[in-house]
Image (tube, rainbow, N blue to C red):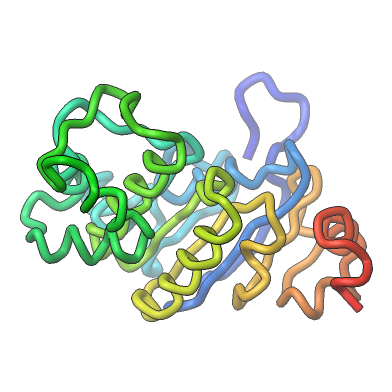
Length: 237
């Protein structure tokens, strides 16, 4: 994939398969192509070469309505619109019950602050979520994706706004509550993806390593450098 006018591909000769019900992660340095690669799935961009398939069908042969019905996407910057917490959560599934909303809030580690907010699910949300903290906006954005019950969820570096404890609790809840869902996590923190079934390491748009954490720390220098810089050498021994 290349952006218009770009002299070199942003994504170059990448072949990947995300197995059903698996947790997958993309990691790499700034500008390595993580977000661009993930953005090809919901067709925020279309691949300029090659194909992207969802459920075995090229995304360019699916209507956006059908494609997006099978996806839940949490972007880097959580965006909420003017309304209530409930109306924001129901954006991708208007028929969701209150039970569905509280379940999603539970998994997203947002139940406590929503329950403590006057009005609860009916509490007002300002345009852009400006009356909420960054972490609260991000957790509501994650809950909104969960409400869709989509078979494929894409988390684009959305855990970085969370503290380490909330991050760990959220990842544990995801493993327990949506084990049958295929997930793709774009991450900066190694700690967020250590338990992933498949970690894809990108460098300048190319895949330089694929595997589990324990394998990549010994087989992929790029991944090991990232892990050592964040966790320290002792944590990998």
